[in-house]
Length: 590
Image (cartoon, rainbow, N blue to C red):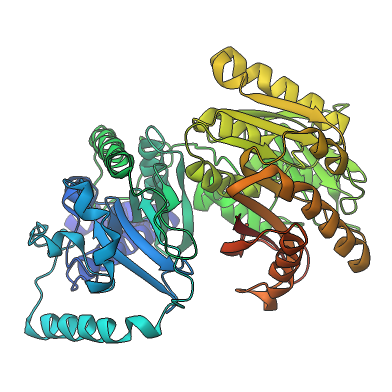
């Protein structure tokens, strides 16, 4: 009788039984991975979770469907070198996760050379870092770990002069906001986490996935990057120590408040069982929207991705507003069927279009967009929401790249209060809109040649004005060629210039455009001003991008000025052509 009661349901529906067994195995695999990871020694320099991140990590690790893999509650430090921690040409000093109590002591640059490179400021003040309890990511350091740490610090002190090129004495102040990486059991679990995070933070997304895990990355928006000295090592703010201290401490306070709000949002999430997956139709089924470059896998979960893999045609596409834009040529594929399947994959998509041909001309407008599914809207207008800011886009007449969303947020994190900012080649003005909405810049001037794009920008400003008239009033949009319109602007008046330039048809034309564009924008920058120059490079040119940086140096020399390259990196992780990438070079002029 017992055998009949237990086995009959299985025999009646073997597919359900097999699926249930497979799901239980997946949950067991995730639980084992979680226990194994959290039991390992913490290899960070702190040896444990930061005090201000302990509570939020504990709440996540108490859930059965997620655990934290790395975190930083936010920190400030001084640095010099290339600005990239993974290289040996980078040194940082006075790392602190706490408020700066004494600005005179912290910003006393005369004693900097006496310190251990990469030394923590809390350690220098004999402050102890609170360790997280066992089982929540903190592990006790044994004798060998302590010895290894001591040897590492001694070697770092001995080699500090051999690392960064000390001929460049520019010293920088950096504030890195809250950063968190979480391993989730499945896509419904990731959707739950993202729904809680996006109630506080804008920079949240799926970082990657594989069998039985989905990685979610979260990073705050209270960043700061500013030079404290000129290239000769002379302090720039020697009489403004208290102001510098306030810049750091105010960011700490805002950062911690956001962590607390995120923690409360996590506590409000429905509880889950570690042995059961989130139900596709239950509390764990969240439909969330990525602000840029939305992937059908993320948007609908693993079940939807299986359908994506099964359908023919391109698997990835850009989502701009309510329009899915395919960049890959379809050839002889059944375009109508592909379009219909994409509409089914994401309920937020109303139109599916394919870009036929590359961008062309100074206006960077598509040659032609073919409607594969949905209404044949003419013109093909849409409103794209990126990190809470709405941007009107005419897809048939103007260039817009949703993949540049994270780069635009990086720029916003660097803009300081009362800055004068100029955006060249502004397009539909996504950069200008983000800066006006997210920063305290005094004025943003945007220049664009394309009349259709300018009309889109004006409509976007009207939308922003309904929510915040004062912020919308900060933006001035000018229609015209950058090479002529820039001459009418006040010379030497801008703290920051953004130049996402178009590419020439040939290498010869492109080189000529580079020289013309640089010659017209350099006079706009005041001494100490920063330019974010967007160029096109081959993958083998990274990380130095010497061809691009040499062009910049030559143009700066022609203007009778000097420059310092601050950063050189890919603007996004997807190529614009085979082995060709859009890069951004940040440089300061004096």
